[in-house]
Image (cartoon, rainbow, N blue to C red):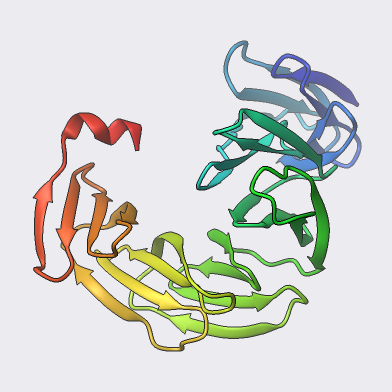
Length: 276
């Protein structure tokens, strides 16, 4: 077998008689299978300062693999949640410069935050946390519920009473007990989703599609409402406080602001787009 530290000692590559090269944290938590070599893995090495791994096996084969570590994060007002070291979640209050760490001891795949709720997706479950109090300065989270199902999704958001999963062109709303309560089938794949607020159980969802449509969906309503349609696939969007204007960044990296009632658009300053 073989061992090799990766990214400055934060992770460990392990290969052996099971024909697999696997990635672990430095605490020994299994993250993912990097390669299947077909026979005993005898050696592994890395390319310095790059996320490339080369492995060799007993049958004489070599395999070069690139590992990509995507940013996993979520934002609600002044609270910013992000993944650290693949298995921890940091929640930061940007206004008060306070931080708290939740050690999940498993691969954190996605996070979502909304008001007093925090959702963390792990490989075989989704854990929902809540704040101890309603104090806006409270940074103490406790486990509220767990959905012990392996739910695959492209995007994930949390509301007061639901977990919302995006799967290609479908939105699915699950209760915190794991019951699927509602599903929306849309005309194109979902590229972006944002919770816009509202009463508990009736929150609004702003949804951007690959075909350029922007929809407003309410958690208790089976019928999506189309706000506008533009020609390019949507990368990111947001709505103004008075619900009159929508800002969109599309796949051409163009930022446009639409007045929903007038159905007119104006272009944003292109210098701001890399910041969004």
